[in-house]
Image 1 (tube, rainbow, N blue to C red):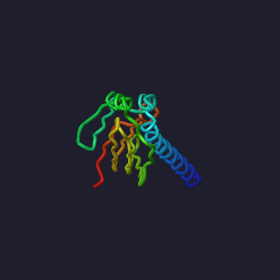
Image 2: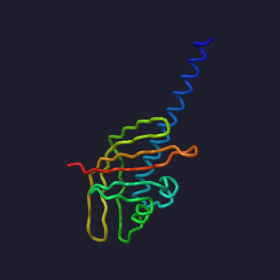
Image 3: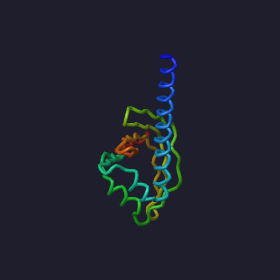
Image 4: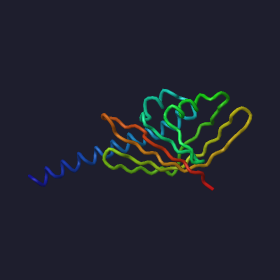
Length: 139
C-alpha cells in the first residue's frame, strides 16, 4: 500500500513539473512574438515589476524602459524564433537559455543581432513572471 501511495505522489510531482516546464516554455515563446509585434500589453502583464534586462553592451533596462523601447518611432522588427532553448526549474524559479537572431530597422538603418540569452522566471502569487534577462552577442 505504501509503495502505491509513493508511486501516486511521484506521478503527481512529475505531472506538476511537466506543467511548469510547459508554462515557462510558452512564456518564453510568447516574448519573442511580443517583441517583434511590439505588444506592450504582454510586457505589462508578464514582466515582474522589478524586471531588469542587461543588454549586449552591458547597460541595464527596467520594465518601463523596455516597454518604451517597443514603441520607438521608426522601429520595425522582423519575426524571429529562438533556438537551442534549454529550461531548468528550481522550485519557484526557472532559467531559460537559448539563442535568437533578430533583424530590425530603425528608420533606414538595418541591424542584425545574433544573441545568446538567459531569462530568469519567478513564480509569484501563483503565476510566472520574467524577472530578469541577459543577452550576449555571438561572435
